[in-house]
Image (cartoon, rainbow, N blue to C red; front, side, top):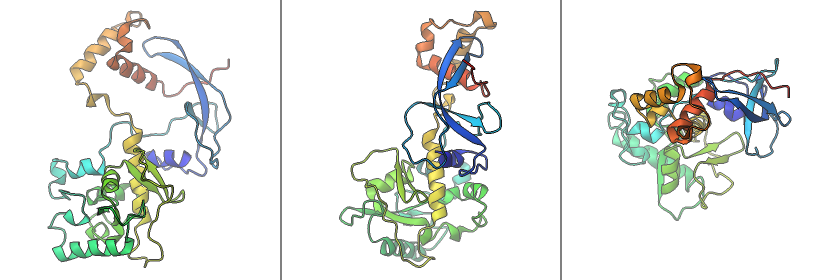
Length: 307
């Protein structure tokens, strides 16, 4: 969990020695005011960074190690596009980028490489993998897909200085950025619904529970370094998948500004004593619950209750 929080964070958090600890808490609302007053109590010990136990359902808060305050790290909260979303984007920035009409590795824009190079990359990846790297099967229809879609090159370089210059197309359009999977799994992989955690060890993380997914990953081994899949690419794919699936989304994805402003005015009023009470049925509506969540979120730092 610490490592995944570090991956999802905008900060350079050391997952082995983070500046915060996670503790299970019980949230206790106090009153409905303009900023929604509440406090929480710790109900269990710190989660160890080395723990391999399954995280139990419940509420958890971050606490700075030096002081008894809850501690937020900066995490993306708006919805992020999946690789597939980005590929089909009509934004001008992607006009000359990769356009995937299918999930094939060879379907990228002709301007980046010749057909011979493209087909050669597909053949190399297929020959190297030999089968679906997730299920190990050769019987189903197989597809060759990117690990990181080349349109994300600039973002990857921004967060991973280990990658070379973002203008170096050869880093993205080669066999190390390709893997072979069954058709339906390749679709899920490109859409960030499944990811491979190469550091834990070769574990598959999935937002889609599929009976076809085993507990192991058969990544190609004993292949020349220049042909093996790039582990940094897998790490970035996991980072992006956590961000895509871990965020609740932005309220503007569902309501326009006028609808939201109207609901806020109705629930909060102009003065504190005009705020709708907890019995108001509008708090139970979808937009009311979103506004309540926003009020809670504005309480970024809260002292632990003594009682």
